[in-house]
Length: 218
Length: 220
Image (cartoon, rainbow over all chains, first blue to last red; front, side, top):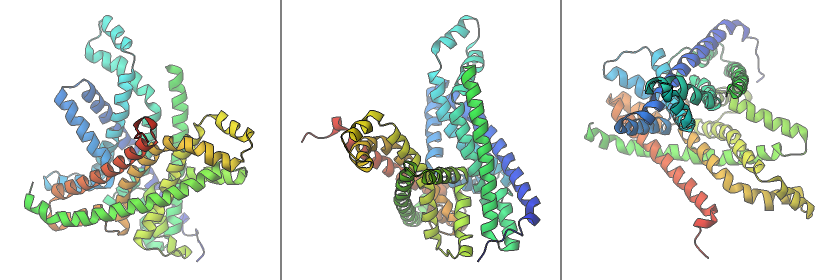
């Protein structure tokens, strides 16, 4: 059977809408993953011993089990305890928490690698402990871990596809809708793959530029 | 926690865990073969082969595994490729992880000092013999860790083939949840099974690493 892309333009709007949602989910979940990642890394490193130990275990659980399983747990588990969250936010939060564990891991190492003289200098200038962390140590750690956290964001983009399983209308689910009407799976999945690839390349390029600039700032 | 429930679902989880293990092992073997071919192509003297390998790695790493799986499983029949869910799953995952593994292998080969291959070549060894007797033995210990990490990533990725109907851990867990309405117990148990599988893989990685480490090898 020959490939026939003639049906694709008719579904262009649907596919592009899906792509926009994929990009939006990537941005939202990416923001969650960085925010939570920073909080978790700081709490693990500077928090009480018990908190630190607990966070390390939780992070391990998130990194050692599949994303899909975590999403299902959140999806079915939240409704069991009476929290009714729309699938969209379940997906964004689940994806965000999953990558927060990876970001916290990277940022923890970067925080430890910041020259202690930086904090000492800030403290001797009269900055409080919290302000020293917030204005001096964390920004430097984030700058030095930019390449790895950027890579995580690119992986996160690809993992947004998994949210289609929860019924979230992003690129894959919209492609499936087009397929259910046209019976052209190969063509539409190929188009979806190409769109992911383009966004992926754009993110890689942006990361390369940003990493180079971060190198200059440092 | 409902202990009775845990005992009741344990056999189902154990059976499904074996399928996940099987998916991981078969995909990893396919991945190793694919990665070896990709690395060969990347070090080839034929430029088009090198370009093809670079493009392959870039495209595979630049698109979601789930989309690749759907392309093969749902799109395959259009090209006359009618595969069972299991076969489509291991082939897609094998070819996917092979691209990632090839980067680790390539990195290990490149980190062997250049002088080693120059010395071997100047002693009259051919390109392939140089690779086989000088570069690979030195690169092998360096690639164990990254191959292990990729296998762990692969084992978690096998959850995705539940979406095309392979009855593995995630699929079984989901079905058990819909019949028991106990998501925490069931998913916790499935999660524990994944952690066990990952533990086994890390153990194997550590053993292989130790076998390469002369300081830890038993005296002959």
